[in-house]
Length: 309
Figure 1 (cartoon, one colour):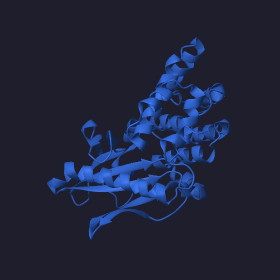
Figure 2: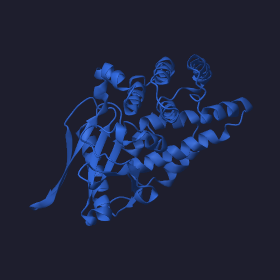
Figure 3: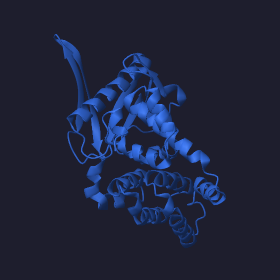
C-alpha cells in the first residue's frame, strides 16, 4: 500500500499551511526500522517523509496510522500514545541532532468517531518525567460528512482513500460490500484523474474493501462493464487478473501462506515478540481462521483476544 500512497503524494495535493515547495521524499528503508531497548523486535513507522517547508527548512513528517475497531477506550488510547512516543524519541535519536530537521507526528484513528484533538503520553516519577502531545485525526467523523468527501474526491485523491476506508468500516460484513465497492470504483472512473493516479487508487480501493471470494466473479464483471462504459482498460489491476487466472487453474496454494505471514507481521507490530506456539498456530490455520483472527486484531488488546472465539 505504501507504494500507491507515495504515487499519490505531491505538492499540489498538500493542504494550505502544510509543508510544500518540493515533492515529498520518502526516506526509504533506512528509516523503516527503529530498534530500541523498551520493546522486543523492531518498531516501524507507517510513513516518514522528508519535505521542504515554505520557509525553506526541511522537516520529517511522521504519519502513524492506527487501525482499530469500534470505540477505543482510555487504555487503548494510552497504549497508542505510548507507541507514538516510542516512535518519536527513536526518530529524535537518529535525526534530531542536526537542528534543521524538525519532526511532526500525526495519529490517524480510522474507526474513531470523535474525541480529543490531541493525545498525550506522560510518565512521571518523583518530580521528573516526560510529556509528549501529538494531534490525532478521528477519521470516522467523516461518515457524517460524506457529501463533503464526495465534493473533495474529484480533485483530492486522499478523499477517495478516506471514502474507501470508511466504506470498509461501514460495511464490516464483507458480503454486503459488493455494491458500495462498485459504486466507489464507478465514481473513481469518472473523476478525470491521470492514468497513474487511477491505477494507484484502484489498487488501494481493491485492497481496503476486501470481498469474499464468492463475490469476486461478480466484481470482475462489474469492472469489465466499467471499462467499456469509460473506455478504460486499466481499472482491472494486473494483480487481480493474475489472481483470477490462478483461481481458474486451481493454483492458490500460496494464498493461505501469504495470509499467515501478513497476520504474523501485524501481530508482531501490535504486541511485540510472538511466542513460538502462537506462530505455529497461525501457520497451521485455515483461510477462514486467518480471516477471523485478522478481524479480531482490530479490537483485541491482548494476544489471547486475537485467538478468542
